[in-house]
Image (cartoon, rainbow, N blue to C red; front, top):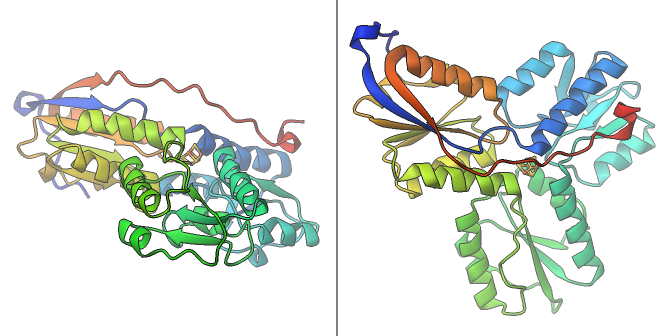
Length: 323
Ligand code: SF4
């Protein structure tokens, strides 16, 4: 809730707003949302969605208002309605069950997550044991671990886990990572693993995706020069939470995660001269625009857009929705 009411123009103090580039939607999120929207257009409501399609409260609420029904597991869906699997990916048992029930299912797994699945399968087929760097319980980690039989993948979450990891048996090792991790934390963890297991490939090619990497680079550029960085995103969005951490580590005096402008406590801006704004990969641009508008109502704001990477990545929709 806002704690300060809008201020009359004459009383507004100057504030520089630095807007990160790139920010907000990535190609995988854009595709996943379009899959639900197109499925609703083509098949009518309700369309079931297993897990939040992307981790953003506003996106989920909007799709729900259009007729999407969000469920935790497939057994909550009827056989005769389409079901969409979220962008984070699913264990292999999920499409197998849907197939056995002859359900119409649409897989919105981001192609960059699918790429990690394929790599994990390749390592497994070559007889390697896989170390997955990621967060326990995150749906992407559950999905990646669920590509292979139990015991084929060991999860490592922290530097301490990397130090404690024991190779099960004599199999050679390989690694994979969640796509939305902190680039710096991950290279630290990989550094430990590489020191302990020199056979591991050099930590040059993590699976952290282009969108996560670019947004972290952008917020690093903002970080040092900002008194406060506001990250638009939901608390369950891994890449958004990482942006707050990266901003603080880059030197921002303060950094906060907000779902939208209504969650800003305007007292956070007391004494702030330079405000940074960015958004996680699942946060829609209109939320950022509304936040800037709310800032303008309270400050004599000069908005400067950072000069960052312009992204052109786009992913195709499943053919059943485009035919
Ligand atoms: Fe795909 Fe990366 Fe976006 Fe996740 S953050 S949906 S992996 S592009």
